[in-house]
Every structure is written in C-alpha cells, then in structure tokens.
Image (cartoon, rainbow, N blue to C red; front, side):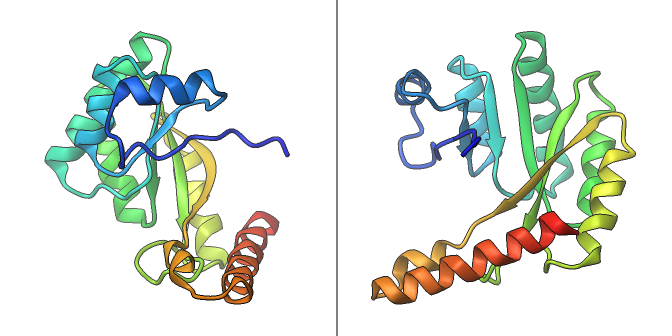
Length: 173
C-alpha cells in the first residue's frame, strides 16, 4: 500500500522497544509530547514524528533543538500543525537551526479535538508551510481515537470509512 509506518511510542516510551519496531519494518516512531520525542532521539531513534500540535514557544525551541540533533545524525523530525499561527511559531523557533522539519497538517476526521475541517483552509496552510525554508510539507495526519470505543464492528467500520473519506477529500484538494 506504499505506507511508511511509525508506531506510537507513547505507550512504551522506550527507545529499546522502538528499535525492535524499526527492526520489524517501521521507519520511525510517533511521540505525543516533546519530552517523549526527546527521549526517542536521545535513545538513538532517528525518525520521530510529534503527532500533536506544539504551541508553547519554550517547547518549540526544544523541537528546533531536536530537529537539529536528528539532522546532524542524518535523521528527521516531523510535527503536526493545524493553524497558521502554529506554523508561524514553529518557523520562528526553527530559525535557531539550519535543519528542515517535516510538517503534517492534522485533519479533524471526527474526533473534534484538533485538526482542520477538510476544506480549502488545508490548501492555504499547506502553501504557507511550503513557503518556509525551514519546513517541508510532508502530508496530512488524521486520528480518530474515538472509533476504538465504539461497541460494534459496524459502528467502528462506519466511523473509519467516514474518516478515510475526509482524508481522501483533503488529498483531492
């Protein structure tokens, strides 16, 4: 299916287990927080995706430092964004390094927590990212964690089909 898998490390938080996941075919790992991403980087994991928006200036400076650390060793850091202000703040922090960070736009596929509704605003944000020398538009990111709590297979299937439809709508845009 031409997918590059990055399992989530927020459960185990252990670079040793992350290395086993890489040996099994993963290309990297996801982290939920800056601290988790830093732990993965310190443990030798070279492909880390922070699958959450980071808005704090202090934490974004840590993101830039980690992007630099991974870049120096031939690795790559990625992060999710869902707003123009988030892109601006990230760009400001990235001025501290020559590294380029991969940026995914988070799409709200039904969770209702964060992410952009699948419409033209996603295209506008993608163009904003592509216009920054410190960023590379890496694609879209979607998560519908609520689907795992639906009781029947039919309910879960309907939720996932609806989420996949929204992601494909964004791809077409």
